[in-house]
Image (tube, rainbow, N blue to C red; front, side, top):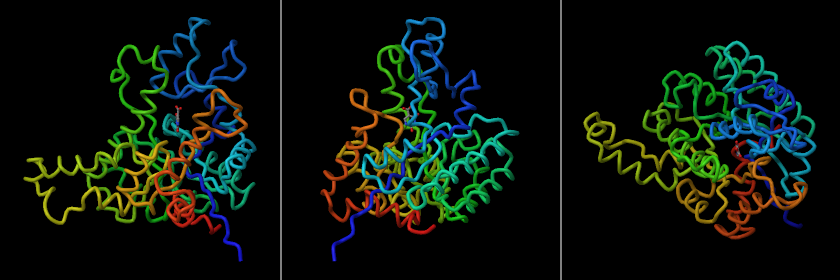
Length: 377
Ligand code: 5CU
């Protein structure tokens, strides 16, 4: 009997459903969508680092356009499926892209969140077995609304987890007020997909960044540092020990966590305050242990070097392939064809563990299928 082909699963792939785009079109501060007469595609402006160019473009038609083109790849389900077919992706676990529901008021986020999650559920139902999703939480709403949202999404057939940013309830993910939310997510057997959005303060990039360096610094460095800081704060606050069932997939292979875990450990055991307070002694679970027990990493790191560090830190059985579609489209070739951003990640897996090896098959799909229960409806 011929061996069945290993399946490819994309766990890092976003959409903004049409109703969410309408909200962005109605806004005058980021995140927003704005049309410019110079170009047919409206522009999607998301990041603090893009505000300066938004202001410049509003005052000067010759200025460079802010943000990124809002192509059909962002909101069209048919386009998502075409992208999957073009790249040999069998299953996608789709999620709302940043900044999720973070900017909505307390009074509106519960209802909007419910309808966005229902929309994701409906989209998955149009391609049963090929699409699952990570739901978004209305974190600006009162606690009972957030807990009700967790109960709601755990009952949605294709929901396999929660996409979460790093701001939490506004004070980061080490905020004790988040514990009941993390407990409810863990009790519902939902996996968190932690994704950055806020980056680092603009001043870090210096005065030349917005006019000369495009989006490179906030995306290549700001996003991964944001994730690294958020998870390190969670670790230091003891969240992982308090909620042993909590499971998180970290975007972009954990930011820089695999590379910096040793330094974090060394700083803990050499910290006078932590030692005095008994927080650095025997019996403490190290960040290495948390990485191997409660954390999964996506494989969206674009090189063998980064991927090898991720594998060393968490294990090849804890990595999951992703594309970051619809971000990072090709600039010089047809967007309906193959995307270099996808092949860079797939090639990195092949180079790190050997093309077609058991570990490669696990990273490309097997791990996601078993961890996220993608064989069960
Ligand atoms: O290009 C970008 O700004 C982004 C973004 O905002 N979110 C994401 O997931 N990838 C790239």
